[in-house]
Length: 207
Image (cartoon, rainbow, N blue to C red):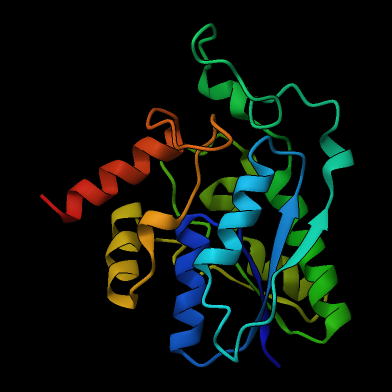
């Protein structure tokens, strides 16, 4: 039946896309515009980095859910001026974003006749959201069993970022073209939790 892939242009979800192609699993990529300040950069990136030239991969579907977070003060929504402002990790919090992604993804998947929602979420060291915790992610399977026919697959759920980088290298993912900065909308800042985790992982496999 194929599946649906939640994708952002970041390293993790992009690597899942290449992993699915390697396994010859067809999928529909879905990108969420939730009002993030870097939305156009991510949208541009996701179309460049996914293997959409492969006949297993459908064109990326963009879904606008930005009105939900239109009053959010998160610095993922309101881009900071790092010359004048210091941003704390807690200011990057967006409530129930992951749960929303999976819920909407399941709706789209069942509507379009897919049986699986794939995601690149991993066991991140810096995730603050309750719905990014290991407990929540490990409970997705039971959630789908109780609510309907859609399965949630997180193939790298127990991996470190270094593990993902290593697998991405094996799959020939264009790692340098992926984008996941939390603070700048055009160029990676190199200092936010996502950038630091990514750079640390790349350095770990390329000492």
